[in-house]
Amino acid sequence: MTTQTAQPAERSTNAPPRAGTREWVGLSVLALALLLLAVDATVLDLAVPAISADLAPTTPQLLWIIDVYSFVLAGLLVVMGNLGDRIGRRKLLLFGAAGFGVASILAAWSLTPEMLIAARVLQGVAGATLMPATLALIRSMFLDPRQRTVAIAVWSAMAGGGAAAGPLLGGWLLEHYWWGSVFLVNLPVMLVLIGLGPLLIPESRDPRPGRFDLLSAVLSMLALVPVVYAVKEFAAHGPSVRVAVISLIGLLAGAWFVRRQRRLEQPMLDLALFALPKFRTAVLTNLLAVFALAGVLFFGSQYLQLVLGRSPLQAGLLLLPGLSAGMIASLAAAWLVRRLRPGTVLGGALITAAVGAALFGLLGPDAAASTTPFVLGFLFIGAGVGVALTVSSDLVVGSAPPERAGAAAAVSETAYETGVALGVAILGSVVMAIFRNGLDPTHVPGDRMAAASESLGAATAFARELPEAAGRAFLASVHESFVSGIHFAALGTTAILLIAAAVAFRLRHARG
Image (cartoon, rainbow, N blue to C red; front, side, top):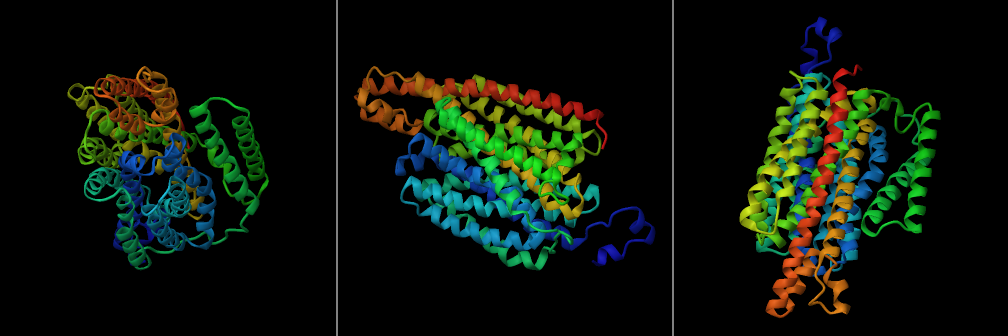
C-alpha cells in the first residue's frame, strides 16, 4: 500500500503501480506451494521401483499412481481458478495446503495400490486449488509487466528448484526409510505456508464475479478427464469400443462446454483469449514442453535404477544437472524476453529441448557408454523446458485483466497438468508396449510371462528367480527392449518439440 501511494502522480496515471517489499516477501511464500508440488512430482518418479516391489501394482495401476494426480488436476483447474476468483485466491490456497497435507499422510501409509491411487486422487483435488491460486496471486500482486515477468521467472525457478531437490531428497529417503516417507516431506512446507500465508499474502478476488456456473464446471471436467483417460488407454492397449465411447463422451462434453462459454455474458473460460496469437501459442508450448519433461522423468528414473543399476541417490544425482539447468534457465528467461521477442525465446527453448530428447537415442544398456548422453540430454531438456514454462506462463497471465487472473492462470495450469498426464500416459505406455514385445520368452514359463512383463521392476525381479544363465539371458532382453522403447519415445518427443518450435517462431510476427 505504502509503495503504491509513494509513486509520483504522473506515474500513477501513466503506468501500473510497482510492487513493494511485502509483495516480494509474499512471493517467497507463494513459491513454497510450487516447491512442494515440484518436489512431490520428482520424488514419486524415483519411488516407482520401490512402490513396484512393495505393493506389486500392475502396469495400469502403476501408471495410474503416477498420472491420476494430473488427471484430477486437469479436470478441476478451470473450476478451482474460477472459485478462487470468487471466494478469494488466498483463502483457496490455504484450504488447498491443508488438504494436500492430509492427502499426503494417507498416501504415505497406503497398504494397497488402490489405496495409493485414491490418496493421489485426493492430492489432485487439493493440488487443483494450489496451482492456479499461486499464479493468479502473482498476477494481482505484480501489476508492472517487468516486475511480473521477474516474479513469474522466480516462480518457475522455484519449480525447477523443487524438481532438482526432489531426486536428492527422495534418493536419501529411499535409501534410509520406506517409500512412503517421500510423501511426508510435504508436511513441513504445508505448515509454513499455512502459518505465513495470512500474514504476507494479500487477499484478492474478482469484485464482480457473477454467479458460479455449476453446469460449466461439470462440463469442463467431463471434457478433460475422459479424453485424457482415453488417450492413455489407447496408448497402452490399442483401440477398443470402450475407449471410443469414453473419448466421444469427452469430445461431446467439450463441444457443449465451448458452445456454452460463447453464449454466457460472464463465461467460466474466456474463449476470446484464444483469439490472441500469443495466448494460444503460449498454452500449446506450455503443454508440449511439459509433455516431454514428464515422460522423460517417468521412464528416465526407471532406466537409471533398473537398467544402469544406479541406487536411488545416484539416480537423483544424475538427474540434478538437468533439473538445476531448468531452474537457472527459468531465471534467465526474464532477461532474455527483454532483449528478444517472446516467439524467438520460445522457439529457441523448444529446439534446445528437442536436441536433448534426440540425445536419448544414444542410450543403451551399458552404464559406461550411456551415462554421459543421459546427463547431457536431460540437461538440454531441463534448460529448454525451464525457459519455455516461464515465457509461456507470463504470456498467458499477462493477457488477462487482474480480475480474471484465476481463470487465465487455470488455463496455463490446465495445459501444464494435461501435458504431465499425457507425457506419462503416452510416452510411458509407448515405452512399455515396445518393452513387452521385445522380451525373450525362451526361458519363461507360459503362465508366468504375463506377470513378468507387467513392468520393468517385475521383469527385473523375475530374472533373479531364474537359473543363472537363463536369468542373464532374460535380463539382457529386458534391458534391450526397454532401451528400444526409450529410443522410439525419444524420436517422437524430438519431432513434437520441433513442431512446437516452428509454431513458436511464427509468434515473432504476431501483434497483441
